[in-house]
Length: 363
Ligand SMILES: Cc1cc2nc3c(=O)[nH]c(=O)nc-3n(C[C@H](O)[C@H](O)[C@H](O)COP(=O)(O)OP(=O)(O)OC[C@H]3O[C@@H](n4cnc5c(N)ncnc54)[C@H](O)[C@@H]3O)c2cc1C
Image 1 (spheres, protein in one colour):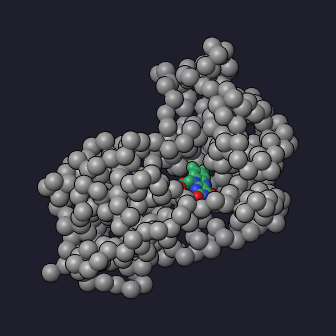
Image 2 (tube, rainbow, N blue to C red):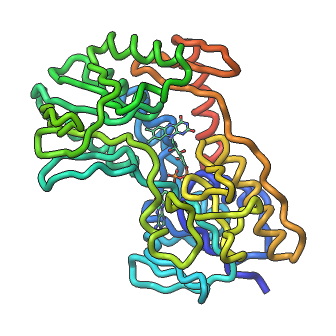
């Protein structure tokens, strides 16, 4: 008899797993997928959506349609609790579902900064809120708004430059504030390209500046200084997804789900995980688009091996060392193996690769 497989979250690994089920159906599982949204953003194209290079619909995967093609039941709801001891999940719709095997690919949240009631704060995750904020503000008359992106990684740089490009003819004061240096002091040539792009758009960059609190209309820095900012966008790095605080599964120090190299939870072997919310014991996080996509195939192989009582494959991939950052307009910078290239040709290569990724999942 087919085993019940519950997939929680339409993360990139699950999307790849669904594509494989659609192209090569298997009878081992009766599969259901749970996600609060019927379509999911492909994040690398989001700065392009914000900048105005892409229509929003062209940067999304239709999760519901992919499920239909893969003969997977789709539940448009969040999972709010996992009771792994009793093999049950609970949803925001108030339902309880039994599973034989469970797989979690729920991404992550953005690390918060304490904020007072009334402060205007938009974390970059969930992506939908970020895009909505930019769309709504772009529709308002130009008003000399002061917006700051807080963070210094690739996502922070791409986000502020995309907003700067979109608002290049508006009155707005934009800044990028990071407690360290841009790109964490690595990739010096890419940092330089990012700083030049910020200068081009008039984005003020403050490195070595820590934001301690967000008040309505103001940021409070660790130095005690206050800076007038109407909208704070948080690109402050990964924080574990809320659901994991409501499970009996073993967690890492940062709140991620701790898994073996076979992608199984270290505490419950019939629970599997991939993507940003999971971390292999001994420290490897599974955080990048390329990794997540390859993980989809590995995840399916592990689930099938477990269901068929066969030895499970072991995940041995190492985290990618390359970097690709879009710079607002149709320009990007890429670093790989000590080599850095920037300009329109790099953006066109990124555009081609992103569109190819999306086409793979188009139904
Ligand atoms: C603007 C931006 C640009 C980025 N660009 C890049 C890039 O160029 N390259 C790169 O490698 N990374 C990039 N990233 C990071 C990238 O977003 C992540 O690495 C990637 O999305 C992780 O995928 P994931 O599969 O872990 O989860 P996600 O893609 O975040 O998907 C998680 C899914 O789980 C669902 N979910 C969450 N909680 C629940 C729940 N309780 N119940 C049910 N469903 C749930 C969500 O609705 C979502 O659909 C970017 C991020 C942002 C914000």
